[in-house]
Amino acid sequence: MISHGATVLPGGTGSVTALVIMGASGNLTHTKLAPALFNLYRKGRLPRHVHVIGVARDQWSDAEFRQRLRGAIGDANAAEWDDFASRLSYVPADVTDADALGAVSRRVGELAADDDRFNCLFYLALAPGLYAPAITALASAGMADESPGWRRIVIEKPFGSDLSTAQRLNQHIHSVFSEDQVYRIDHYLGKETVQNLLVFRFANSIFEPIWNRNYIDQVQITVAEDILVGERGEYYDRAGVLKDMFQNHLLQLLALITMDPPFAFQADALRNEKVKALSAVRRLNLRDVRHNLVIGQYDGYHYEPGVSPGSQTPTYAALRLFVDNWRWHGVPFYLRSGKGLSRKTTEMIIQFRSPPHMLFPVPEGVDIPGNTLSICVQPNEGMRLEFQSKVPDAELEMKPVSLEFHYDEGFAGVDLPDAYEHLLLDLLDGDASLFIRSDEIELAWSIIDPIVHSLDLPGAPAPYRYIPGMDGPPNGEELLLGDNRRWLPGCVEVGYGI
Ligand code: BG6
Image (cartoon, rainbow, N blue to C red):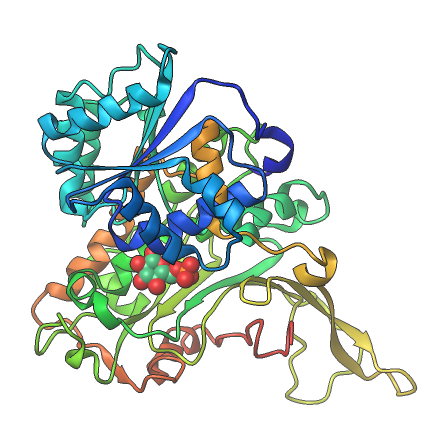
């Protein structure tokens, strides 16, 4: 949700809430959850009645668990840390074993002391194969029962590995928890600039009337990373960029750009509109995929630990999609993402149409492009609107100039919080707006599945090679050249934010 500062009462006297991190010895807890919780605490936003219980198989004591999290959060003064650490405890248990989870239940009971009301947020920071068994174990241990207080479950990505596994997982979850207890994470929705897209579109009146096929020529979404696959080779080789990035982050960005205004900023209203937008994305049949997809793999990918020799897994993809509804009919959406690219950047570029009639003299062979709105999600967060201006003291010569908004200038002194800070507060507040509903996740898989399957067919094109540090394979341009378009200069290339 947008207004945390205003809505959360840090001293809150509510019933005890146990944030049970299942998989507390893993990477997510150390790199994301612990720092985010500590930052919330430091900002006074972590309600007093929230306690964190780590659960994993390692035979750690409370003190050892605290010590490990201390190492994960970096700078902290001793008094702050001691106070925060007093809210951390640890229970060694196999999360798939209902009997072992009894110890977690008892620990929550001790925290609640005389209060017979207490809430539990179960955060599955686990390998995906453990989601279903952990949910079964929670149910068998009686921990899904809501009579003492609310119960919520948080599930990280990847949620399934295709449509049928996602459907099976949804069914399994729904046999224990109702949909309004389930919070599926896509951390991109926790990013400040991604949430700002909603405010930008729906808290201003000047953009919405032109946010459609009559004025927009094309939309480009780029999520580029300079890192390589590194130690995640085993997972990544099975997923590839289409499942790892497109099925979730890129389709979520697409949904936020293309959705209609919800009637209220309220979880179901918002998610209904995203579901409508994703339903309208044209499904590519196997033949169409060839004309709408370019894939690449960086040189040296085969040497990453866990990657199978001769793997054809794409580490880069560029995809053209269409959204078949009145608002977007005929507007191409070009999406690209990859690892081992020249830089890390996430940006969305909305290219408006050129003026229908140019009354000013334009030199032979020069096209005057339409206005461009660049939404820079990361780094150098902000926006840039480019338009034509008359060059002063010259005879009707035009030049593109820009209006820019930079977070670090517009909101000087405010550090953009990590996505997990937002998401954790929303979880505690029970606000599901920034979490993915079951129908939404299945729709996203139904868009990506045929594309991924086409790559397994005999005669499927091999990924083009590219050298790490490039902008993907040169063939990434092919997709656009056929449409007489090209990748537009992004936020960094135009000197934005530098
Ligand atoms: C994750 C992917 O979901 O997002 C990773 O699994 C990727 O492969 C990461 O590196 C990118 O997230 P961010 O926030 O760094 O852009």
